[in-house]
Image 1 (spheres, rainbow, N blue to C red):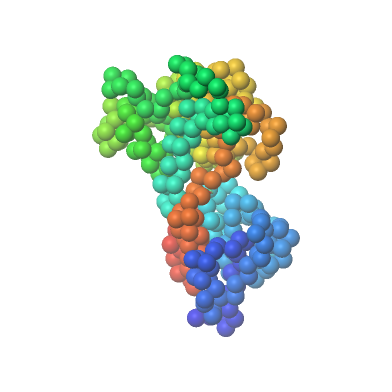
Image 2: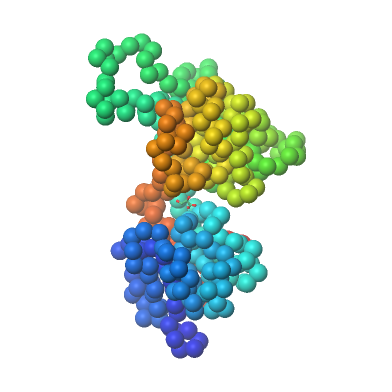
Length: 353
Ligand code: DGY
């Protein structure tokens, strides 16, 4: 099928989506596929030039979608399809104003990101950065073993009489998948702030969610304000969307309220955590450790960044969803969202605008 004018549907894709997924677009004779040819983030100028006349754009988190790009694409554009669950790089108001749909890729990455949340909590809590560096540098202490050397903060409850509380900033799909993984570790309680910047105290009906507690097999699941998430949690997982509303929700005041044995995990967006405050509080022993998949200002995070220098701050380069299985699913959904838009069909996964 070709477009109403008889010409092909132009779909611009800003990264090669790999051999499992590219055929979804490549193998169609009604699609004019325009693919950024290099294995690096797409050049802005290339995108602006090539977007003209496109019916759909398949973009990555590194591509900014704003009025400039939408103007360059012109009135033919029906959808922007981002290969991500996050959409801070997209001006959704501009899309809504122009009636352009936004395809995105939630759900398919939930399990991979929940896995990495647990991994970061374990790695940070158990001093993996400091201790594995000793081994790779050939500095394994020659006395080999010592009663309290390299001891960390234990994720699991050491015995059934000990309570463990998981705290969440943002309580969506990934948070819930992370919580379900914590249950076998002996976690007993959960506190969460669903709308981190809300200044209103939670209403009493929302404050204690017994059906969620039952669902997870926990003693309690409570929606609380941010301060209580900090105070009560043994691990705080930051899993809320980025953007101005959540900028620096984890600031020095939040960190100072956390337990000294607690671990902070951020697998959402770097902007939610004040990096300087975190480095300072870690240095002063205000919290035990941090495991970060995202950092403010990434990918410009050099070796002399204050967080990189902290022995108990373990940092990954934004790989939360980076498993082969998940990335194929994300790429496939992104391609199918774009194709559906081109064919005038409902998108398999559109953000309501
Ligand atoms: C997302 O999907 O938003 C992730 O951060 C990219 O893996």
